[in-house]
Image 1 (tube, rainbow, N blue to C red):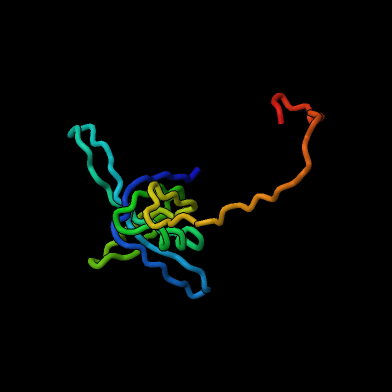
Image 2 (image 1 turned 90 degrees about the horizontal axis):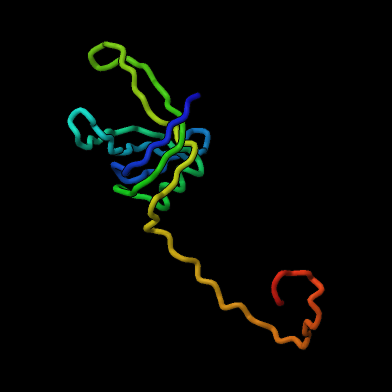
Length: 134
């Protein structure tokens, strides 16, 4: 089973791009704190990820460099030839779900006060069988 959950901070601002097929995507890096038991201190690891469609647009709209996010996805590898001619394997996460831990840019939607209409109808009988009075 290929499943990974990472929580960390975005290393750079989100740049949502459009693929040749018309879909949106973004690539970024997540800085994840990892406990190093040998040295008894926190060590930061940097994990590349890619998000598509809704997740990419969500990140672009609500997150920026330094935002705390949790990514649920799968681990993917890509092997290619490096600059020195040796075969190098690159690892990244393909995000299936993204959760922003603190949404700084979200503005509350203001709604108008509900208009209460006066009515002369009264309820005299508790025929609903509720365990409290209506």
